[in-house]
Amino acid sequence: MDFPPSVVVLKTARRHTGLMESEVRPRAITVLLVDDEAGVRRGLRMRLSREPDLVVIGEACDGQQALSLAETLRPDIVLLDVALPGEGGIGTAAVLKTTVPSSAVVMLTLYDDTATRARATAAGARTLIGKHEPIPRLLEAIRAAAPLGD
Image 1 (cartoon, rainbow, N blue to C red):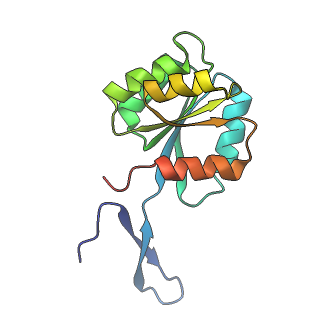
Image 2: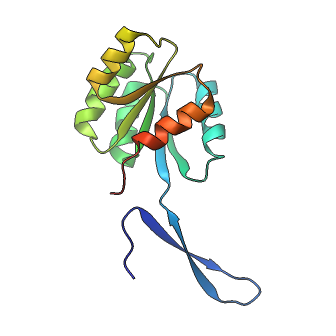
């Protein structure tokens, strides 16, 4: 039987019978975390790891590292801080838009104002979430931005 690309077929062994059964689950949304604060990345990784449909596949501390990892890992979502050293998150988002167009950018910020929102959108971010917002809002934004299938 053929499954759409957004579905992964997992084989699980049943210990007591030795039989195999197929279990169909939606493919996990892969996430690359980008923030210059290690504590923020650690906290995000810990929280996202509690979600069965989200998998953190990499972490970066600046825009250059984010671009390199995104090109290699091809995540569904790049969770990107606006305030990064160097080119900043908005500059990094603009480059990601052309180099890894299959990855959606969700930006995190302490500066949730109209000007920052406009700059992030112009750079290609799908959405901008304030770091002060509740986690369910962040999870909703990640899921909404994720591509539907490959």
